[in-house]
Length: 257
View 1 (tube, rainbow, N blue to C red):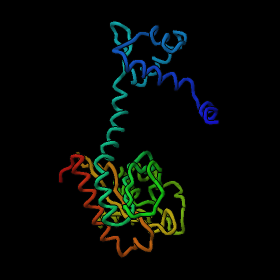
View 2 (cartoon, helix red, strand yellow):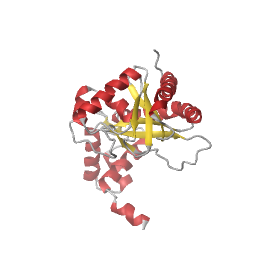
View 3 (cartoon, rainbow, N blue to C red):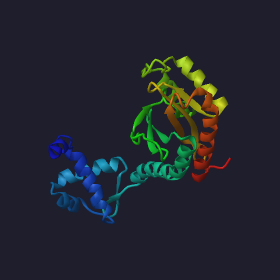
View 4 (cartoon, rainbow, N blue to C red):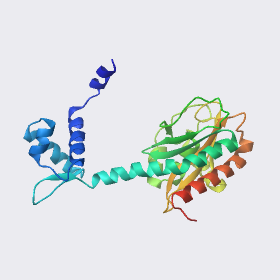
């Protein structure tokens, strides 16, 4: 059944393109004939694959030998992955301490397109929580980390997101653009952003921004917990803890105030 499912989702041209890049990664350079023989395909097919990859910057062609090698486009793609890995590595011990200090779940999220995506989660050692949010895509307007990203993103991107009909997840979700923008402004004054049962009923959260070496907002660290424990009255204290944690991670990433 699993094999059949993989076959349904299988795209031959994509598989071949990946195989070409894997083949080139093991060699300094290769010609069309070598690639065709390795993939057991016609030379014209191999040429089209290489031409497409070349057009996207993923392979390069030596003008003298006409052979192909991996291109700098892969470096640009790898850099984005490396950045997330660096954030996760710097965040792990800080998140662990924050979770133990607050006795709630601590997460780190990055911006991916118009969503936040959780790249690390820490839960206190005594927690009975068995939900892992790692890898989850979350809406920006209904999460504390998402509000961090919304506030700091370029104005045209923010306008693009907020002009769309904002989905309501609970009765507390801010779907009115003016109300949302006002809350983003208040968050700037406080230095942290929060949600009150806006993504899930009974769940509150507080988040602060993580900065890279150049001061750019790379991620957000947040604390989430049941509304009866993580009440609005606690936001100031939890917000300060999130800010300190964010500062520690930012320094690990090279940021200096």
